Amino acid sequence: QVQLAESGGGLVQAGGSLRLSCAASSSIFSFATMEWYRQAPGNQRGLVASITSSGRTNYADSVKGRFTISRDNAKNTVYLQMNSLKPEDTAVYYCAISQLNAWGQGTQVTVSS
Image (cartoon, rainbow, N blue to C red):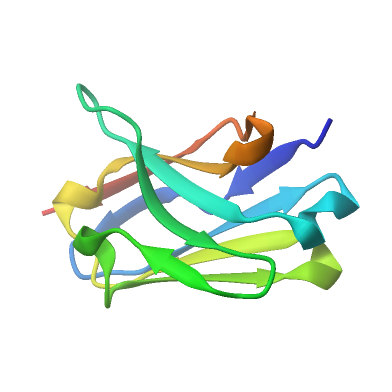
């Protein structure tokens, strides 16, 4: 069973940047579509970005042009670079391989106005 561990969350002012990382425990990472989700209080968990094994990316409309997802297969790690952060980006961010129902524990991102 693959395990996922996120890091890099924190508190940042609006307009600032953060980079999230997610390390996978299994080499299956190289073949998997990796995803970042987020969940704000009172809201449902939603997809932020995804990247296929071949590097094709997809983004939620709300983060297009501000967030960039990337992966390093040699390190079994996926990243989420978040720029121009807004208070509405505040949420717990989860790394996932949804096709395997594998989820990380989440990392809190808080953007102050």
